[in-house]
Length: 202
Image (cartoon, rainbow, N blue to C red; front, side, top):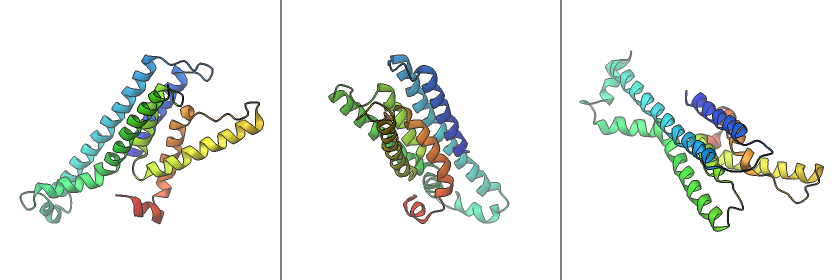
């Protein structure tokens, strides 16, 4: 469910990008920034609401499921509630708790440095687009995301310089944040089978 939820949120964000700012109109307004901010914080609420739902479902399965004669011993009064809380945090929350930390670190860093350099590097909307993409990529998906983000930027810049008159220009991350995240989330279903993913996952 979280796979489709993440994709739906990212597609919504991409639709907002294409609607609120066309390729030919690079002006920024507070309304569009606020919309991306709402999408980012809305995504946090939805993802963790799903985590709570999964935790509740796990509790019901252990307590009333077909193997409840055995699994009930994982729950109070047979077991401390701390065991179930720890199990839920590790299995249903940890991936996105870690990526959320990275997202907030990104948000704080780009706001600080972009302001310091008079907003030369990012549009204000990108703060939340990047944070959203990082958060929904999960952990360890964020590492794959960063790699593909820079590969996409490098490839785009190479094509731009080779086949256009804009020599020396680089491709902006503005239209890369969300599409790359969508791509990474899709391929992550297959990458999860790789040993390196299993080694990094929580």
